[in-house]
Amino acid sequence: MGDNMNAQSTPSGCGPTGSDGCPLSRRDILTKALAMTGLALLPPPFSPPVQAQQAGGGPATLALPARRGPMSGAWLVLLGTRGGPGIDLTRAQTASAVVVEGRPYLIDCGYGTLRQLVASNVGYLQLDTLLFTHLHDDHTGDLAALLSFQWTNGKTTATDAYGPYGTARLVEAVLSLLQTNVEIRTADEGRSVDARKQFHGHDVPASTAPVQMFKDDRVAVTAVENTHYSARSKANMPDRSLALRMDTKERSIVFAGDTAYSANVVELARGADLFVCEIVDPTVLEQMRERAKVASAAGNPNNIYRHVAESHSSPADVARMASAAKVKTVVLNHQVPGAPGSLAYPATDYIQAVRQGFDGEVIVGQDLMVL
Image 1 (tube, rainbow, N blue to C red):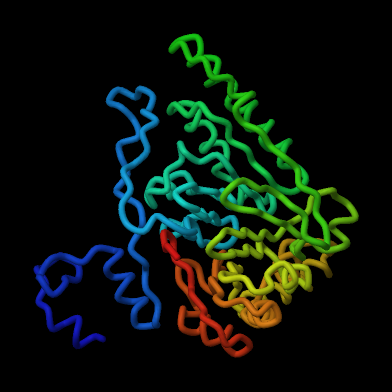
Image 2 (image 1 turned 180 degrees about the vertical axis):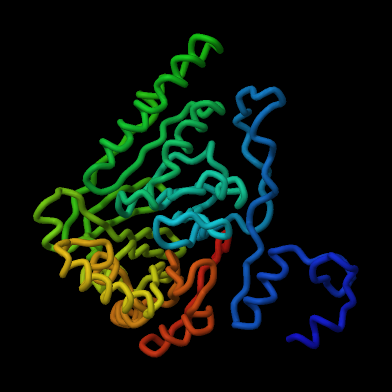
């Protein structure tokens, strides 16, 4: 690879260039790197975004971006693939969009989601349905920004959020946060949309058997409880964590959510086309187990280290669930690497580790990847 890179002379201070001598974009470089591992970024099925804000900060028009490319069928767009609550300048926190016949549905809404919706050309003004796997802040951090700018920038239709216990309360809290902005712009700009009538949260029961979470004319969503929270924690809180399955006419997509191995998830995912699952570097899990012992000995048995070690998936866990469910393709999301800022477990190693127990296709997700 080094000889090929050096064969093309590059002006001083410039980055790598392509065969035509022009600088390579970040996407070009990523595409070439993924191609070496047998992966590829699919061409985005959406056009470049239109300007969402008029000069001077006025409200956006509701005209949707012009579309191009293959818009039929169901597409998975990975908006954020970073695992955990840390802030990363190269990856957004967890969020995905499923676009069915041009209609987007958002799954989780971690920090950076709003910007990624714009960057991916999925958009945010036409987004009506949000689905939460659970309510940790790395899955909900951009909800306030999303709803606020939907309202401010001219969305007039309803937005509904569905998730486990606490989702309705979360949306109510966001509405309280937005109230001052709504009052100012209503008085000062003549706004007429009532945010409290526009945005709604719905709690979905957690169950060992799949329950219907949402359904419209393009997708049916079912949910089941996964194993992100331990029995000892659930004894002291009503909060739960879910895995989701989205069935369309063309394909089925399952989001395992944050979870350790879960028999419930296996049943939900049976025969799915895409199995979107988190993955944690095994070295991280081992470190967490050791730190959990130290924290427990110091008098804190319910510590963050124990939570990470017991409630997240190793490559072996991913393979075991995918193989038992007989899914077609695994998409690795919510990735927790072994060292800050880099993958101690390279993409090829992630793939090889999962393939030790699963013989289907394995894709290591990247932000803005379209599948």
